[in-house]
Amino acid sequence: MNRILGLKIDVDTYQGMRRGVPRLLSSLRQEGLRATFFLSIGPDASGRAVLQILKNPRFLKKMVRTRAASLYGFRTALYGTLLPSPKIALSFPDLVRQIMAEGHEVQFHAWDHRRWQDELAVRPEAWIRDWFRRGIEGFESLTGRRPASFGAPAWLIDDRVLSLVRDLHLNYLSCTRAKEPFIHEGTDLVEIPSDLPCFEETGIEEGERRILAGLAEGGIHVLPVHAEVEGGRMSENFVHLIHAAKKLDYRLLPLCDIHPLLDRKNLITRRFRLQLLSGRSVPCAV
Image 1 (cartoon, rainbow, N blue to C red):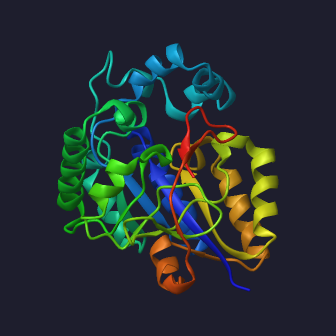
Image 2: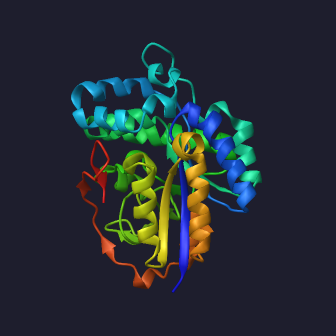
């Protein structure tokens, strides 16, 4: 049976781009690996998360459990409120070019990650359309091409989103948490989901245990990685996990190399639903 582990790296914040991405690039270079970087392009409005702390006790619990201040930094907690929102990938064009030059896949994650995560359900379709327009224009200015994939912020989508991405001529999506790849109902688009947990949800010891238990089964898996976490305080744990996956004879690949390995005839067509997963503060598409 194939043993393949996809590395899906989400970059959600300015600090994740500035500090986490270079550290992850160094780790991947030393290990001789390539990954998929899903980049947030536009403003870092992370400071608006304070509104979630007031409205959602689960969010506050998550911030305490993950020691968010040490992960994201003090300034990040003020962006979009007391401090202006800096652009994320757009502030680092040379770094984006370095990611691509080192052979990694670069795809579109977000224009404004925080507002999508907090406000998608109440925003009109025109807002979603403009969000994609701004993000894709920024992506094109950085990479010189249109994105071939979309990885939704916080694994959050709705029917309007799928209707819009259906017309973007993408090769695949990575927007859900699910056990195996499938085809999104009504779109003909292949979904390569994140099936393994991430450290920020589980903590280090529990995360390693659950990830390695999933890998013991063999097959195709996708590990969700965050530049702010595995490129920050948990960078050594990320490298340790890579070594463990290699010992299990896994090939570690970017998602663009997994997509051609999937036989569409064997993929089930499914409709997503929203579910609150353990360790998360808001529901994800599953």
